[in-house]
Figure 1 (cartoon, rainbow, N blue to C red):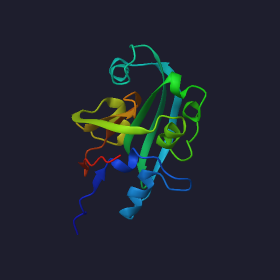
Figure 2: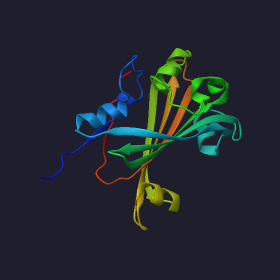
Figure 3: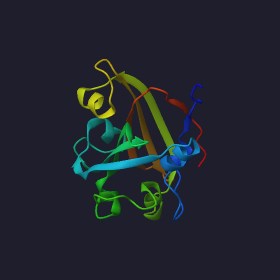
Figure 4: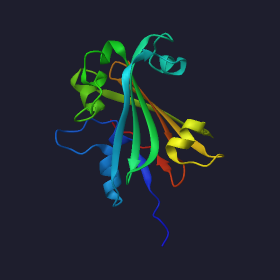
Length: 179
């Protein structure tokens, strides 16, 4: 029997969750009878890469806090996700700590007074790097689907840039954004 088309919708990922609510990926995977989890990698402060700095309206090299995660579906890596926050917002908060942010980063941003009100997403495909091929189990000619999301608070201030590199096999993205 062919696998059902699985449409990923962005809205649950950019809205704050309530206490005790499962994260958006876990909920989405569960809707399809699967298990969605994350494995946290590096968390720390670093100079902003040029493209991230532009999206966050910073100068390249300004400090940002980055949270790197491997997204798993049924314990298999399907996505590499890096989220960047201006250090002036994230420094000294749970965003800068090397542990899961209970309730999610979006809920914490809202708590800090930066509730996302606008999301902009760009999607493109490119050949995977050697590290991406290895991490996602792609062959030597594998490609990744790259989704870059910028969240802005009510005042238009960008507060998060997430760069997600996905195994494109079986991916279907649909955009619905209501905040």
